[in-house]
Length: 309
Image 1 (cartoon, rainbow, N blue to C red):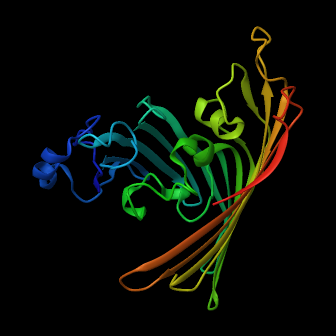
Image 2: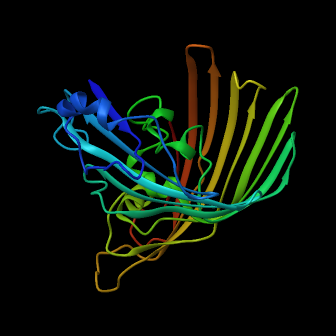
Image 3: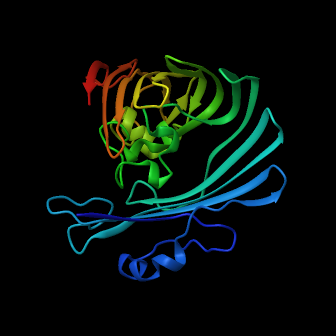
């Protein structure tokens, strides 16, 4: 069984660290209302959101002890601001506090912060560039995965949008070029650019090295791109995402059992399709995930494998 409470708050509302599910049902009319934006001055807005999940499982624990009375250890609280000093220039930033079992313990973090410049904006075409800590265009849902009502369930499918690797997949520092062409046959959108992924955390190390080692992962310039086609009314959406993520592992010499210096190359490709009818939608995504380790001194740690999900 799964239940979810999702609220968005303005400056006058408070966002508690967690909210038990039973009083939430009673307090729902007072706490949760349509999303509001507080406009400090013209062109500058502040938004906030709160998402609280409840999990009750039968055969395995998820985000805490979910087999015994359920778990509330999945909470996302965010605040973001945007400022448009000119029609073709926008600045946006978001800070996030997130609890997700042992994977995240609620420490506030700098989620993204970027400058978006639109060079061309007409009725049929849009071309621009984003600088800073940018959101990664990844599949159909990664761009807005923090916005609860855009998700098809409390958690996105873990085979594609794994919560343990959120820091690795959600955003990074770099440049993102984007372009969109609209016509009678449909809309074509392309986003691509060089980025530095966020790999200086335990979850990313577990995802790329399959273990927590004494040394440190160092990011290298990587690339991500997504091409998406949609029919004029978005009844059909098709997308392909490609990533080339490169990292170096720097061992700590004080630990003789540490891995030697090595490199990791991760090149997933994700194919996405969605059909939207008036009252329902059908979505499917498939990922092919080649990963390659080379240069490590530990016997058997150099490998070249392909996973699927």
